Image 1 (cartoon, rainbow, N blue to C red):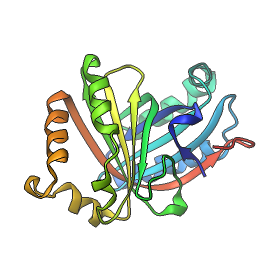
Image 2 (image 1 turned 180 degrees about the vertical axis):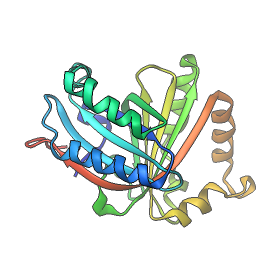
Image 3 (image 1 turned 90 degrees about the horizontal axis):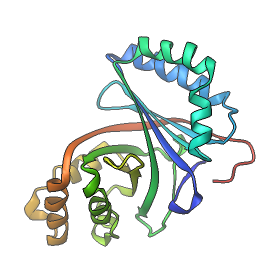
Image 4 (image 1 turned 30 degrees about the vertical axis):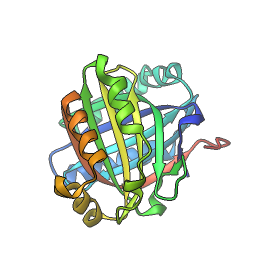
Length: 228
């Protein structure tokens, strides 16, 4: 099962796909399962496929050895002339985000977390756009250890990733279920501790955009011989 941790040296890529309805989402997920199941690309380490819950979409969390390996994959003739046109028919938008893991916090205090369908997580992916000059401050706010979060019912983990382009920070969070996450997400400000209110206020002032969605993990595979 793939591991998220800052020390494993992987280039982390998010492939995010939006589509129009459940039927196209199912077709997209089936196609991606097939690609992942047969993946054997130089430098590819793992892929974990997520199905959108709140809206018809998909996310692929991919670990690569290096950015050069990623470029070789996406510059291949089969990918450009077959995969891209097929996905274009199924989706309304596709985003490829190159990132690195900055920090991981879990409920039990570990600095690493597993990802995969056997865990039964509700996954929340939050994309926070920012001016490149503010990315470091935003990361510093979000990566601070937070003992209060560990006490929240249903919380499992959250991982902070920095986009290599400098204009985005991603929060990849794992929860027990949708009800637990929704209770936390809609918690009134006055019920949150002072440090959380201050962090949220400063963080919001640094954002140029914010987008989130909920997912379930449906398929995962790692390269033979790769120990996450």
